[in-house]
Image 1: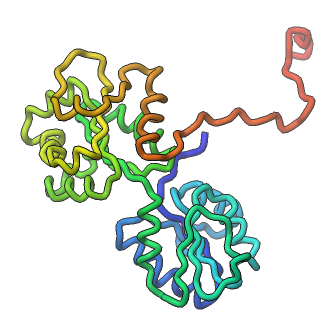
Image 2: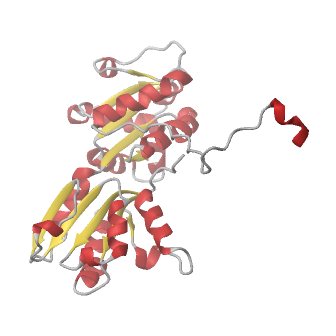
Image 3: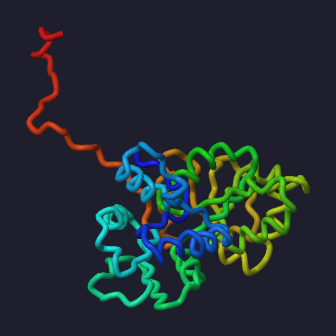
Length: 288
């Protein structure tokens, strides 16, 4: 199974000026100033390791690849390889480029002669899908082991409310909810026990979720088969059922549909590398 992405952006670019300097001194700082995590070969690749292997891993580790295309981009086998192994590609065109030399992509940002990076930052934020997950301390192990990894495999950037526990509560939660496309609230008997404690994460985030504007983003998900009363603010929404193991894949798929992203599929069983090879059978017992 492919590991879920752990970075927002991988930047593919030609190592020649002025593109190289612009990427390293303008684009990457702008992306990171917006809170995006960036993979960059200059600082993240290891010397002595396979370059193409690290390129492929970087493209898989990032939710989005940004290919900065100038008039020489297609001349490099390395940059072309990076773009072809990327599943979600934003092409940033700098300068005058023949349209035939622009790569097939999911989104194009034409900067022309401009050196500003904000249009690229906006494009990345448009393509990235973010989910903020609210749940009780008692459900956090399930959230970390099941829900978050599956959403990440779908290329969704997730943040758990428990990660913000040490910050100034309401301000941090408001920022996280504002950036999120959807807010998944994991409902359980443990959630409602925590809700009664004013100092708990659940109680503090609950105040933010009460906002009418946030309610439009809320996806209630029930992970506990026990009987408990659910507040009207959640019953107004379709509650996703994840109360049994066999429902977990469908629950993740339902969240992905609401985000308009493809749900993660099960990893295909690799084909035999030696065509014609047959498995051992009882008739081969004398060999052992």
